[in-house]
Length: 318
Image (cartoon, rainbow, N blue to C red; front, side):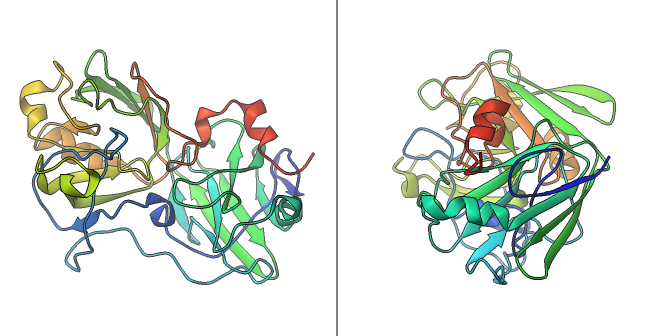
């Protein structure tokens, strides 16, 4: 049954803002998306992966966010464009050019409406790159059902439609050094290498925000001296702080055996890395298990790291 609610929570609720393609507004790291490259991992000053660079016009970077604001919520932007197909983990995320005061957040939620056959709730998220009050997300109680059609409305005349595609959930086990990819009723295991001790890959559930055929990563920009600087291929973006799942020549030797990266998840050159890159879309789920610190909710799309009760409590509405 399709249910339509304004504000509040329930079997589907509210909507939001202007177009911005999946996650560029959230990614935050200055990764360079270009046509092709080599392989490797980046790491931020917190010991997690990071990347830096500038845009290359020959590349396959994600589309840029639209500047169109919500008519009744000046400076608001949405992470999904009209007509997009997303993975089952994609939250609806609205960011604002200015922080929304606590006293006004319930009113903002009441202007947001989502229509779909799902139970969900809005929740205010402290974004990795924004002040408190700069972002509110809508997350269903469980992953979206494949094939779900979603309509988002916000303010006066702002409407967006998107569709949930097939399910893809990849589970990275840093203890066994393998990733299990489950999609369309099939499952396969892929050797990986994750963050070395002291540079551990974030634990927890992450959602693909975007991907690029190659990304330039420079260790100097994140306080690691001359450890690395170069292009790395088939880069699937997982966190704002710069965690990627991508091709890494070290995985040719250490994949399935040992964790040796600076925090990213590395796949072997050639087939394994390209196959995963080709099949993932924004909104697909990557879960890391067996690691240490859990990724923060606002470091990319970390909404799924909260329980349903915790998520509902993040709404400004009773």
